[in-house]
Image (cartoon, rainbow, N blue to C red):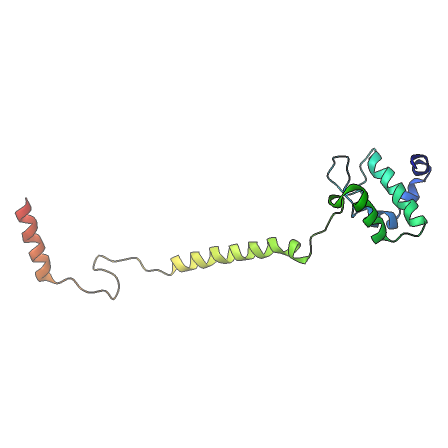
Length: 142
């Protein structure tokens, strides 16, 4: 199998059909990329698997059959599941909600009137008789 894999030309193993399937598989060399990666010297694991994918396509296997075989041979963790629409739009929604909260908070505090010495606007007035009584009580304490 390895000799057959090495006998493939680079154009056959780098075809869009092979890369379509390889992009759904995680490379096991430790690079944490998919097998469609094009690292400068070329990843031997990816090259070998692309040749294997090409040979499977050559005998007529569908993409789903190839992915099922890889999953069966290497475990289900080899399949890469791309994020759906919620996975790509969720950060933008969170950013919009956060900015909305910041602007709402700023507007809320900008609209408040500071308290005056006479009390809050529209609040009860202090009775002058009560102020006189407080002053007398304070004099007794001294």
